[in-house]
Image (cartoon, rainbow, N blue to C red; front, side):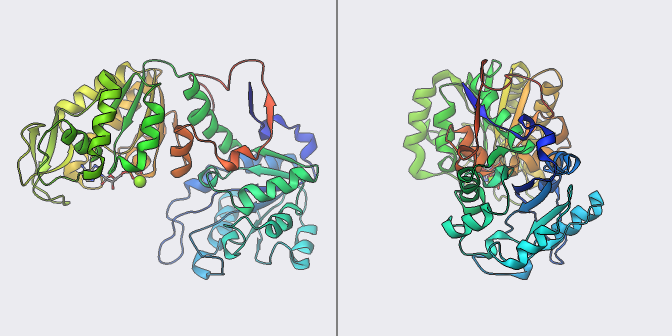
Length: 419
Ligand code: ADP
Ligand code: MG
């Protein structure tokens, strides 16, 4: 067996004075005034930054923000991130706007002291980033002799700063390893699920089957139960021949849903009741109906109370739970109970030893809104990357990192870690 080499595998003594290129994911939400509304993506990298700073490394941070399309856009500047790091950590973090190949940038990096952190301006200001331009990769790669892959949320993309620069550094005799956040994401989304504590339960929801089909197909053989909620369940209802009224259904996926039901057999648990309304709105007047009593005008907005109980029992008995996608339109209070109650049931189970892994931005937001986010074993910071990894796909930004041989199995199965 082998696993990805991480920052923790390196001797801190080897980091002193070393120039380290750290690809982070600081694609943070900004308000109209350019203030960071949620710094979770920055906070998630602090264990890596502290480790490098304390070891005396010279840290060069690289990130993207938004989609500036290969040209400078002041609204997508990383300046708010540099300020955040400065205020929260008390570090002086220069924002370096000169291009990676320029002599100006080189001399600024020459001035970097041991234990100091600098931040390159938004790498997507450069057209070469998203097409993994070899010249940009070479320029970035020549800035350091150690690459730290910490941008889990961007690891499913082969860009100059996620893959190209790491290749260059390795080719030049340097090293490429996973940072602490990347290590944690891999441990819970990949390694833990290779040997999950059983029963292994997957909860899926959200708007569409189509966006998660690869994940469902990949996870179905290894789970003991697949609990389906959200609008996704409506398409399964139609496959059963049930009337879903005016609910959101993917007409072109009904056959697929039928096929999955046949393959999954008793593993797949669908809702038995629903919260419906004639309009999905924040002030909707709702009713609870059995799943075979949905009226022609009704729109299904949430799982009903009997389903919450049914799913709750499965969660309580589970050894491992992977949750991806809300059980209803959890943005609107009348349809939020199903999702919130599932989140609370999962938090409670986690307190009794269940390993809980949450992937997907809306599910993470729902866990947060339910006030139980900090009680989960792991909440992934990556949307598309976590779906790909859960579906068993390899991520370019992980493949480019070094591996080490291990005598035992992959990672640490089950509980543990710094969650
Ligand atoms: P995640 O980000 O956790 O992966 P998704 O993006 O797949 O989740 O799904 C979240 C979206 O699904 C939300 O916008 C939510 O309103 C929508 N959704 C869930 N249930 C329903 C439903 N019954 N009808 C319409 N939309 C739904
Ligand atoms: Mg989403």
